[in-house]
Image (cartoon, rainbow, N blue to C red; front, side):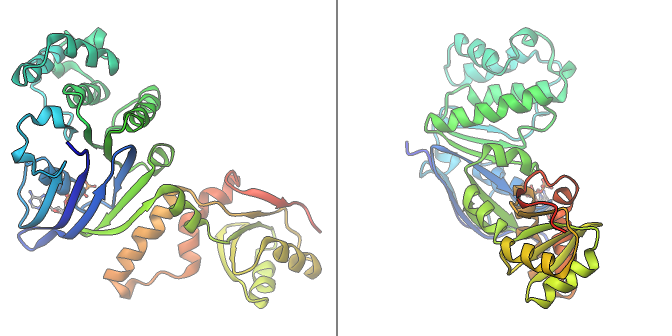
Length: 335
Ligand SMILES: Nc1ncnc2c1ncn2[C@@H]1O[C@H](COP(=O)(O)OP(=O)(O)OP(=O)(O)O)[C@@H](O)[C@H]1O
């Protein structure tokens, strides 16, 4: 079976709401693909249709070239974590997996293997009702792995995990992809995806906003912008705008400058006598790139709420404004 997800022109309405509005994307094996979008964008609906839990009004959603309903041994072909709470509370963790394994003729040995893989071996004989959210997430991931499937669909797998668990799943997803599996992971935590995902499918209002490599997206979002830290913000803005730059205030003493290289910014501020404590090439975070992408989609849909450059850069740049941690300093302390 070719381990690939193909979504083509999916449409789904719930009454007057178009949850999916012609959604198309592919997920290829050997990499982790993040599936992201604002609340209500249509992520869960897409995953539910892919897993045969809901039907599309139009379009197709295929796993390995076939609809989920046509898979003869689904557990062996696709592993899914949709709702970690979907385990009967009185059932013991191990019994839940035994029941699933039995339905597919998998050996008991495999149940104990996946319990160990997710670090739940010690709690396997406790009732799921007494599990923490993180433990239920691990049990759900164990269930997804049971059939050693080439395709994994995980909805918010980091949800409820402690820092050790988050680190574990990050490495684990990378390992699954390195084994050549197709891994589609929805998440709201861009910081997590920045460290984990190779590719992103960003959706909004039931449509694809971006289908791109994470590295390309970060490079594009970083652009040629320059971050400036100065106590004399107003004068710096006047000098740089006067030289043709586009300037946005991103904090009490920070600016983001476009259309001028860092060296020129340093020279202009220096010759105008504007004191500054740092000028740095700006490197976008995935969170920032994502906010820009999804904000554009909202602007497109409701153009009366146009967002000015100052607010736009401020929304994305506050973190940098405070710690400058993502910036590669090119000049310091020129008077
Ligand atoms: N069963 C349903 N009945 C009515 N409306 C629904 C139903 N399921 C989803 N919707 C609507 O479809 C749209 C897409 O919802 P969906 O849950 O797929 O989004 P999502 O991207 O998963 O959101 P979130 O990030 O909040 O989980 C939303 O407007 C939602 O209210």
